[in-house]
Amino acid sequence: MLRQEIVLQRPVSRLPLLSFLTMYITPLQAQQNHSLYTAAPNDWRAEAFPFPLSFAPEIKYRGIEELRFAPGMFVASSETYFTYTFIWWLEGRNSIDARVLERDLMIYFQGLYRAVSKKADKDVSSFKIEVKRDSIESVRSKDVESYKGRVEWIDPFVTEEQVRLNFKATRWYCAELQRTAVFFRLSPRPFEHANWQTMQTIKAGQCDMHSQ
Image (cartoon, rainbow, N blue to C red; front, side):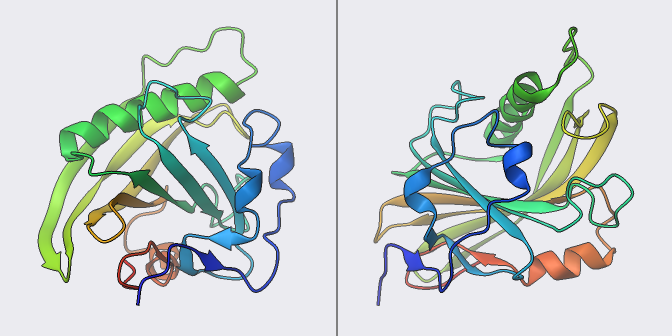
């Protein structure tokens, strides 16, 4: 049985992220009591934003971005520093592959850095994105592709220093709802780290109630 949105049992907590994200980016107020996530730890904080993203309007999708942040996301000394997930829930069927992901993520992280960094010279020339396809499969009504890669950029929130994020991404198309989903998991820790075991338990997306 299909559902187009999932109602949270409690309101989404928004602090202390207000001091980081929402002072730069307008949140999607209408999504505060709804979630694209079907499973996530209770202490991972949430935000949601509409496409086109205010800091990266060149990414021409329509839909929603929803995020979950680990408790130590903005603490440089934490084991879960910059460990987080986000899902793009996009209108229509979008042709998204490794090449498109590299392009979109470069625009995304360059735009986010420029929007947040307090440096006068916001040099993004060192930013690098690498994406490789990991697997492809068909699940029910969905064509599913998995990717992995890395993002090399500068953390504009905490350190203003170079940071490398490893990531995994899953892209699928939901024919029933005519939506394309891309679910990202990111952390500077290696894939063998416990952070990835935690993120593997986080589920997001909708399509015949099957979540990645």
